[in-house]
Amino acid sequence: MGPLPVSQLLLALISLTVALDNGLLKTPPMGWMAWERFRCDINCIDDPKNCISESLFRDMADRLVEDGWKELGYEYVIIDDCWMSRLRDEQGRLQPESFRFPGGIPKLARYIHDRGLKLGIYADMGNYTCMGYPGTTLDNIEIDAQTFASWGVDYLKFDGCNSNPVEQMLGYPLMSKALNATGRPMVYSCSWPVYQGGLPPNVNYTLLGDICHLWRNYDDIQDSWDSLQSIIDWFSNNQDDLQPIAGPGRWNDPDMLIIGNFGLSLDQARSQMAIWAIMASPLIMSNDLRNLDNSARAILQNKVAIGINQDPLGIQGRRLLKEKSQIEVYWRPLVGSTSALVFLSRRTDMPYRYHTSLAKLNYDAGNYRAYDVFGGSLVKGLNATTELTLSINPSGVVMWYVYQETQYKEETETLHRAKHGHHTFL
Ligand SMILES: *[C@@H]1O[C@H](CO)[C@@H](O)[C@H](O)[C@H]1NC(C)=O
Ligand SMILES: *[C@@H]1O[C@H](CO)[C@@H](O)[C@H](O)[C@H]1NC(C)=O
Ligand SMILES: *[C@@H]1O[C@H](CO)[C@@H](O)[C@H](O)[C@H]1NC(C)=O
Ligand SMILES: *[C@@H]1O[C@H](CO)[C@@H](O)[C@H](O)[C@H]1NC(C)=O
Image 1 (cartoon, rainbow, N blue to C red):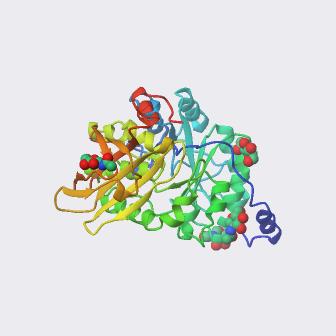
Image 2 (cartoon, protein in one colour):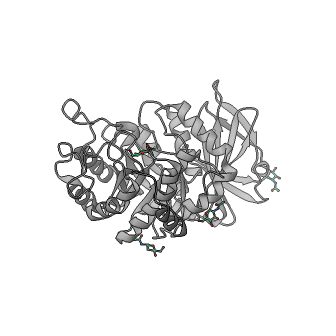
Image 3 (cartoon, protein in one colour):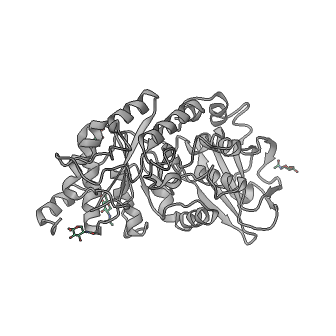
């Protein structure tokens, strides 16, 4: 498009304050997204099982329902880039590539809704999507929002390739308004911060929280421990800026869970689940649910880890300590004065025996119990000064759910929900 008319710029600026406060995502979203595992595989002739097509999303919806994911809260099935035709239709609407989506998006949405799941889709604020498909320029925002609503979409990931900062400043709030104006409650995931370096003052997180439900702050995750570590470090190093802005309806998004793919060991997979739970991150898997080994499944379906992630207070956790021994300690406060601790080893030698006490981690005097989230055992009779020795595997974690013995004679709400399999953790 040409230079921006000044009137349009002013109009957008004065209406920036509109909120997309439609009550969605009181806890971080859970589900499945195509990108990290299936990328832009559009070759349905040679690779029919793995190409971006309606059958891939139907397969994943089937697995979510039949393999116990849905009842744990994994409910969004999200299409990423490469679903579109290279051309808009005669009315200027986006359309799916017809060979790969012969039934169209409304039919896929019905399939997903019929199974009690929700459908997410992808668009890009800019001239083209990151992979070169039609973008949503400023003049197309309204029609695209209307199209998605008419198809029954429940969630929009709005990427930002091929746009400039001024277009992004206008486009992200405008899409928020346009989604709201459709009358269909939709989750709005904004990639805007990634394109602005992810930090204040370039990024105004107060504004983001008003107009989006979640936002990608940093680089795309890749299928490796290196990538995962760089993400954990970036979010922790910048936690003073990022931690306070998260809360019900407004989440930082460090990107997809890669557990069940090729790049992580068993310990590293637990580390991702533990840190994502501490950081109140979206639990959006990108893996092949049709071929998942039991250890990956057990980690992703760990009810206490999920319960911690979905805690109703929605307070993002923090890195408390970064020891010379390369042990890091993370902490998250949870409902009912309970809390979660994660001890992460960045070592590369052997299990490390880490000595600490709850008092050293700022816990008040009192008698505590700790549930070992991945070990499955309960540690009783702790007080704040009890000396603890934890054995933490290289690139692995020990994750504890901690509560006061006096306060909970039997079990806490989080453990109760975990044991009795409630559908949501609200
Ligand atoms: C639109 O925004 C208003 C005001 O924040 C909110 O009450 C309403 O639920 C929103 N509707 C949708 C469909 O997003
Ligand atoms: C988008 O396309 C317009 C029109 O061709 C062009 O002027 C503009 O520079 C492009 N923007 C970006 C960020 O590529
Ligand atoms: C950030 O956005 C909020 C909400 O729109 C606004 O009130 C505030 O002035 C902005 N802050 C800065 C530094 O621009
Ligand atoms: C805490 O527990 C230790 C044993 O683990 C015990 O020696 C100590 O007296 C206890 N302290 C308090 C204040 O109860």
